[in-house]
Image 1 (cartoon, each protein chain N blue to C red):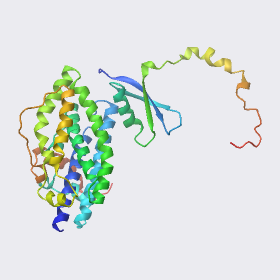
Image 2: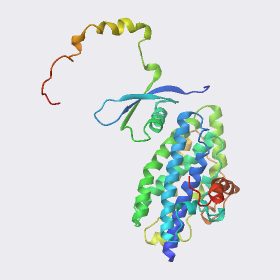
Image 3: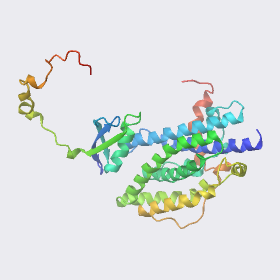
Image 4: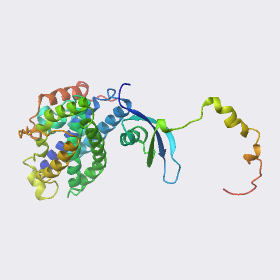
Length: 253
Length: 92
């Protein structure tokens, strides 16, 4: 692969891995949702994200041209090769934490896909436009819950505040560009994430305040997802997700 | 279920111009969330273009004991169902 193609390949892996890992995480709720309707809502979101992951990963495989399809990329890479952000590998915790993680990510994904719908790479633009419709809904759904839980009972409020304190330092990682992204910026294939950050902060802070939550003042942000530096949680989720295809590599069912 | 959820009846309009049809019910904390839940539960396969949700407590229904005087009087008024007119060759 030439350098620019490799940069796009890595970029697509990042987009795909975010969908794949968050989709897999939310799938853990399947059959365990707080009640039937929300169980279905969470499963819907999970399926949307896994669908997005398939599209981005299969495009990545095409670009690479080594015969790796989306399944090969999903199931036969190790933790250090995963480029997803730290936020999406974070364990579900309680329903409030799952919702807040979804909210943080969906606000980000909406801004990102809006920009990418105008990418000079036509295929990436088309995939982003399709994903945009889905993440808009994910955002609205998690935002409505955030407002209700944050501003709900003392119990729901304290759980949301705890979730916020637990995850705030993971949000900065979303806006880390990869070094190779520069090649994509100059061709207007991708966009500097620093442009997105102020929009994300403005929207998120306003919603958190409306949900009567206190934003942590600690400015420390943990980073490294796109470079393959992950929390231990990623290895565990990969073990569960990859065990079957690795045990029976050509298995069909 | 010990919680703050209410029951809502869900009505879905399959296409613009068609009447909304009752499809079932959902639990939700309020009407906005009921719309979200209805969307997720009942329109996953593009079944509708518009959704109404109504708190179930606001639905007034007749009781089965009233069936007699509610519906029976229509029994012997067959002329209200004009099925015996010959519509000939009228094309619908």
